[in-house]
Image 1: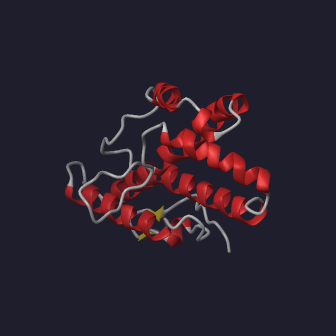
Image 2: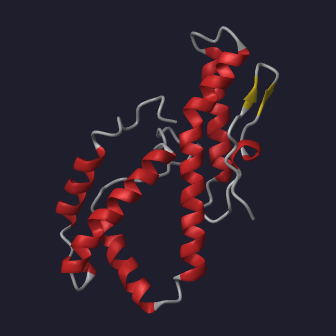
Length: 176
């Protein structure tokens, strides 16, 4: 099992890599096919949108829009694999994970949406960055709490939204 982070997804206007060919990920997050579908959706938008003057420009725009997100989901999948492989049998880790789950609920965000519905999915880069912010702020909150119910969920959510808002315009096309 490997993760692929291709440096170039296209060659001029003659060849384009999409999905696993451009960014294969380990199957421990369940988002590989979804990420490939997102590539197709963005490609379709670019092909039918204004400024689609040449295939080479469209291919370059696709790579620019999608690369950061495909790299992010690859990183998330590897982190999840390492966690499942190395940590889930550790009782102390499981206790911390339950507390962190309570903390994450306080953020009020869902990282991934299902493509079949009318919800604009969160960009994978957003999910990755949100995880970084949650880890950073959950450490302090969880150090002070001895049980999940002692975590101030309202404060946790406010902290996360405060730290994320300058970096992301949520549910805005172009973040895909």
